Length: 164
Image 1: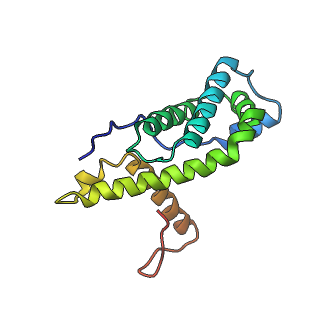
Image 2: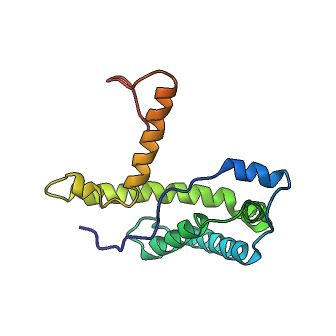
């Protein structure tokens, strides 16, 4: 079904807010400048590539490659000081808004591409759905939403809407 190689996207990025708060209070380890430079360069390359391409779907191998590298770079374990250095970088702040817009568009095109792939299947079952690169992420997001309902002492019913 899928002629494109599965990108190395890994699991959804999870931010440890306590570590970031600690970094802001001055209890941070020193910046890993080599890692920061690699992440910054990867983000800039992704921003440039996304700006230059019209097809942001997985059908475009340039997009699959650059987004795989981006996800790998930004989900790589790093200390809070390095993360804050990257986020505060002038070049990153300059491209951030357009990058988010392009990433949002790429996500929509990726979901539409997968929908097309699934509609071509003679039989759609859980094994077929497991091919979707972000299936685990969607499961996690759904669980977070269901857990939120539980914290509110509520349960989804037939009239409820779960985002993921």
